[in-house]
Image 1 (cartoon, rainbow, N blue to C red):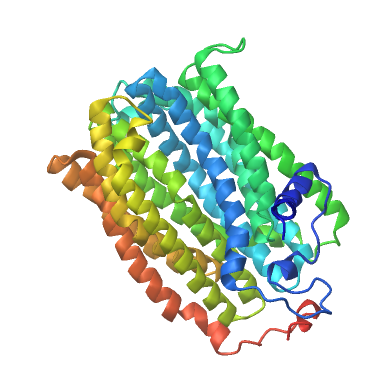
Image 2 (cartoon, rainbow, N blue to C red):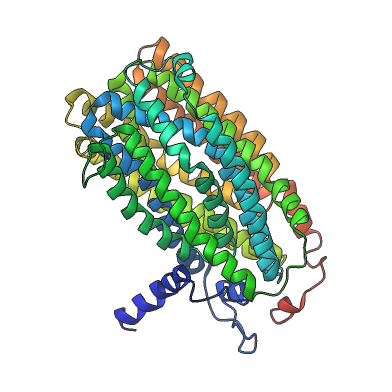
Length: 497
């Protein structure tokens, strides 16, 4: 097969969806699972690894676009000095504390949509998108009002005084796009749940180009725009998020007009999304609260330590995105398999995800261990910042493999709708491991940021162990092992029985 044809086949669908040229196909769930769209030619051969890669790589690219919004802001404000770099880093953590609960809530959209597709109810999936948009708009409005002048909060957290003005200004500016951020999260999860990860990828990558130009111009006053410093970076990102929302909303409206009417009401869809999304949202929120506490402790160590932490963490976010994408793809495929009541398919998908994710993340760890100083030097020319960041990269190299196992098993369990157990256990582990280690090793023993980062090794090791046990022996399996065909077989599934 010629490379030009492959490129066209892989990229063109996403571009067409972005332009609104193609409505959601009702056979999307079958195509993702390797079945003939018509059902008459029998199943085609597709391995779990191939399915994972086909779904995960656009998710990874889309997540890279989302993460790069903050990474670009971090890089651009680096020219304002260590205080600005650390302040934007602290602001990013505080913003994510609020957004994390929304992002967790929207996982309910994805899992519900994926189960609907697997069960042959693809026309109901869009109703979960509508529910997510409503939740997102409401939560975004709350976050906007909660983000006005957080100077008192930053002082209470004992953030270095030199970083406070930068953190406050960036939060206020970026939260102007909070409604867009939250609603976009719902639409991204919906599209992933139905098997369309390419459209969010294209929207995100284009958004990054827009954000880079806007942020640079508004930070330093280029192309006739005012020089707003850290505040300009926030405004650029906020405008980008609203543009992304406009593009994704257009597609949902277009698809809704071309599909059969959903069989469930909006109220029922909201209730079902909340049933899975609220525990996951609380889990995400409490987990990020633990990380925020950890970051606040590091912030009290001074601008140099915080700048090194921000450089390493920003790079790490970009590096583990493929691992996160594999976990998200596994969640979708597990949910679709269990929607068809095929536990054996879910098992194969999870094994393939572990193999792929562990291999990649281990490779990332090797790169961090060998080239940490070089990476840090690309963000800062401060010798002390680079030296501390190099040691943090060495710690990151240790927990990369453990983090891969932890993330993928969590994703699989969420796809199985086992969200409450994951939330309780995951929250307990992270709070016991991360803030406590930062306080005792980082502050009490004087190990600084390196001492705090050792908590990630503890957290990922414990998480990998308990999530592995839950996946292989958890009570969630009873529904699928006792009576795998208990549910009535729908007409959409009859061709595969």
